[in-house]
Length: 449
Image (cartoon, rainbow, N blue to C red; front, top):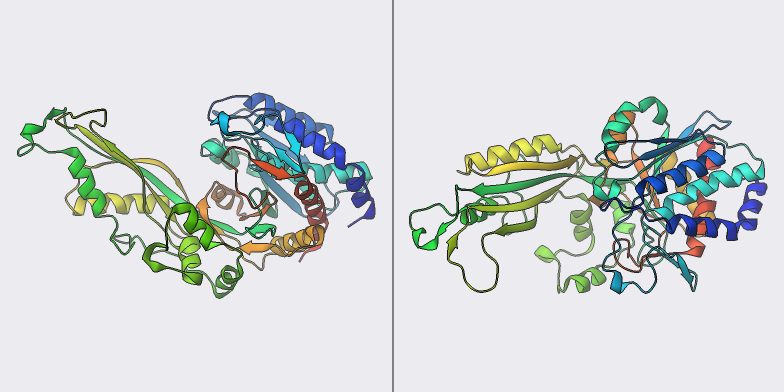
């Protein structure tokens, strides 16, 4: 990488930290609609001031910000980020103002410090370093920064579909998340999809429980229906559920074997002595990262107030998420769920779809993966841990569907994962090294074959 860019990064460390703090001090809580337009305007104005073709796009939800910085080389890199943050509550558990961006012992405390402002902002500062060094960008850099990631990215799907020309690129990166438990920067190459539903059993009205011998109880109907979905061996029983599952490759399993994790810490957090089914080692990792799931996320019915109330409730509902792996389609799983319930005598159970995402994975041999791995290694002097697929879900598939791009994600947050918890913070040092890593990535990917 050009030494002038590195010199600018060294000279502008305090300015780069101050600018991040300014961004963190702007609330942008998507769930509560607080500060969203103001934060989007701040980012649009900053990107425009750097010479980008920056736009603020109004959506049915919160604004999306895009910017294009033309470069010398033929390649184009699309950078995805989100400026919205989780609500800071419970406020009484914060040591510092959640929107104060106070720095203590090299830690910058703020909501959004990791998720995602302190991560994606590294790419904006990398572009700025090239501009200030007077060095042409070696490739075109595009940004898409949304404001609804924390509330399911509802506006992102139509936006990407309608702006394919604006967003077309050769590769896509996100910058979000944390170091591994042992302090290594991390790269994520894939994620699971999801089919989220609400199941409801209902009758006309509540009744006195003395009529229980004769009247349908929706709570029991729901419990019995849920019992058909999964057995005690953690196998999903929906007919055809596993038909399209894409198994991990040998190389993905090797990456999984090398993955830095701490099962003892997870067990301690959960208050368990062992994992389900006695899983351990690589088999536990494989199930976590590559197996589809069926999970009851919430269930409710009837009277739960103080004291007794003898009643047959008229409504019982449960929210269920099914994490999917690549090749499983949410619409197909939804149809199979309906067929399954009907077959088992539960055609009265209503199914409401609350969202669907497809899973995706990027090949470890992809040029963007190799370039990102090298750039992080050079900046942090640490070889990153590569996770072939995370257990969670996200909006990445929309880019695969409409732009034919699989997302990889670089993670520069601290090992202590407080992203959605009080006292979220990012290390000053990892933020600054993250800027250098992305600046190096621009050059390395522009030359990758």
